Amino acid sequence: MIKVLETVLPVLVMLLLGMFCRIGGFLEKKSIDNMKFLVTKIILPVAIFHALGTTVYSKKTISIVIIMFTMLLLSFGIGFLLKPWLKGSYQKYLPFMVSVYEGGMIAYPLYCGLCGNENLSQIAMLDIAGLLFGFSVYMGLLGQVENQVGIHAVALIKEAVKSPAFLATVLGIIVGTTGLLPSLVESAAGGVYGNVEDMLTRALSPLILLIVGYEMQPDMTLLKPCLKTIFLRVIVQAAMIVLVLGAIHQVIDQNMRLDAAVITYMSAPATFSMQSFLKEEKAGRYVSTTNSLYCFISIGVYVVLAAIYR
Image 1 (cartoon, helix red, strand yellow):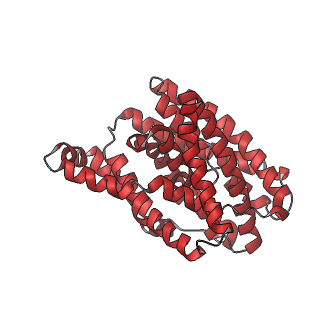
Image 2 (cartoon, rainbow, N blue to C red):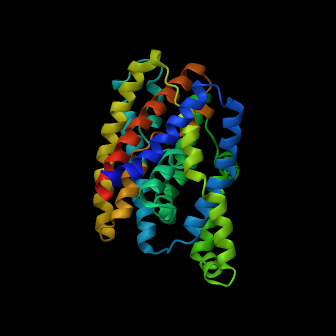
């Protein structure tokens, strides 16, 4: 029990601290936005770059990325079939709400709390498929739904290039597969690089959890459609987790850290960035409320994993 509390309590404390800072008015929204900029534009990309840059790549790695990308396509397609279950103006957003994951702001800090920053590559590897899918099929169709026009490949590439996380993923894979970063780590300058990287990324998890706690502000007037969406996402993602774990175990031997990464990643809510693409304020509140409430499911899964792995 003590081991579980050692893992779970720090996460809960940071989330509660974020809520306390909002309710008590100790931090303004502008301060949180500045923290979010620091995390998403600098700290998280550095962590992703290091994790993927020091990963050993093989055919199995490629297989895992393909499995994850296939699963994203499948869950996204299932979302269209489930649309009749959600009535009203939110129906068109259901495929986007039952697919993709908020890796950076939810899955990453929870996984680091469970398995440590040194194993971040396990979950970052899964997120490769998420980023590729997000900047192709997902954002393309979301733009079409909102604007009633198609988004061209050039526009998607421009959006991807503006994302530090996407760039960090691409550069991390390049320096990892070419052996440049592993060579640096093993060289005489490796200690200097390691200390700088550690100093930059050490605050990643607590800052993210503080931000998430601050922004947990569900709109109770939207409870009915949000709970329906959450229920459908849980059903879809539970099935997808079983399929992904089964497929991965066919490719590689069972790896508890990778299994934990899959479950943590696929238990996260839909991407928070979806809200920035929506034109209607009410639609934005629906997405925000659904994701805020879904965070409690992510934390619940994290507690169960902590009990199992600790």
